[in-house]
Length: 94
Ligand code: SF4
Image (tube, rainbow, N blue to C red; front, side):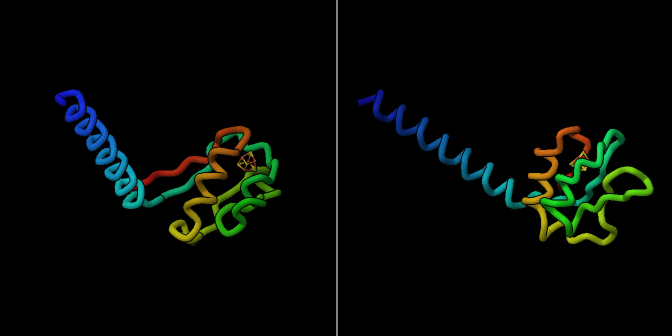
């Protein structure tokens, strides 16, 4: 009987933790995006998220589109950062 109670408490704590993480994740918003040195102009980010990333042929690097709507593109920004082969796409959340 005691073991059942303990199992229930552990399961309850796990659910509460998951709900807290989910809420926290929803509350976080991308506030800044930038590209560090090392971009190889593969074009993956500008293909995946053209509203935020563009290739600058003159500077030979991808750039963040000025005034891009970060909130509307959060998922694709995160995907682009994850998929960037050079791992040079960075962002801050607050
Ligand atoms: S995905 Fe990375 S390496 Fe490719 S263009 Fe974008 S920033 Fe550059």
